[in-house]
Structure formats: C-alpha cells, structure tokens
Image 1: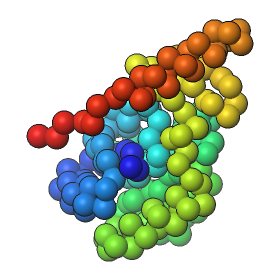
Image 2: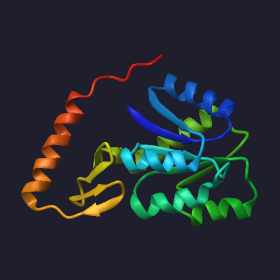
Image 3: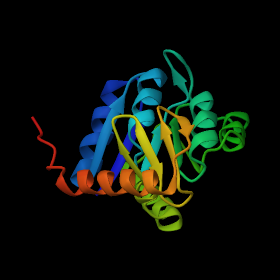
Amino acid sequence: MVDLYYIEDDLNIASIVKEYLEQKNFKVTIYATLAQAKQALKNHIPTLVLLDWKMPDGHGDSLCQWIRRNWKELPIIFLTVCGDSADIVSGFQNGADDYVVKPFVLEVLYSRILALLRRTGNIAEQYLSCDGIVIDVNRHTVCVYSEEINLSTVEYQLLLYLLLKIKERRLPEKRF
C-alpha cells in the first residue's frame, strides 16, 4: 500500500484528493500546516509527499528543501494554485519531482503519482521508523528525531531486528 502525506490547508480539496486516492488503495494522511508535516516526517517516512505551496505557517518550498536535506530520494509533488513559470521553476529548484497546478483532474494526478513511483520505487521500504527512530537501511544510519546517532554494528543490527519485528506485528489501522 502506498503511504502518502498530503500537506494542504484547504480541507475541502484535501478531502476530495484523500477520498479518491484511498479508493485506489492509497493510505493518505493530511496535514494542515508545515509544522505538523515536519513533525510527522520525523516519526515516519511515507512513500510520497503531496505538498501545497502556500500554507498558513509558511511556504511549501521550505519544507521541500528540509525533506531534500534529510531524505534525498523521497518523492515530492507540489500540488498548488501557484502556476506561473517562476513558481514552477522554483518548485523544481527546491527539490520537487513534479508540479501539478490547481485546478487539476484527479485521474491525471493519480497517473503522475504512479509514474513517479515507477521511477523511484517505494522509498518507504528504505526506511524503518517507530516513535521518532528512523533507520536508513541502505546507508545503515540511525536518526532519532532527525538527529543522526552513532551505533556499533551490534547495536545497529539489534535495533534493525526489533524494528523489523514491530513492522511485522503492526495491525491494520482502524478507520472510523
């Protein structure tokens, strides 16, 4: 299942996108501020991020840059009303993989997400996370709330084993 974070302050748009993508077997979590999204990213790495440009607590490009500094491979699509060429160029320069201008067609957004995932794979499989601890399996690094810590080989292997066991035991999320 594709785990997607959608950072959007317009809850009407967010709800429509969420409902559509969940019908396509995506798990969509909505964050209405950049701060909420940043905190969530410190605890769990999704498969993909949809990001609005204008947010109540700043511009999406700052979060995009922060994500790129921490997880270079995490796919990011700007989904925004800011559609002039300067905004689009800035979005790509700040690290976006794609840029979709509102209004948009849901089927086109879905197709662009699938195309991006075909190129990048499921980046979330590279990371294991639990309560602020994130292991980058490819780089063999461990971060606690975005701060890298040094572990011995034995400590790293033990932590990796425990997080894999937690991942195996997680129950499907209840929906209300």
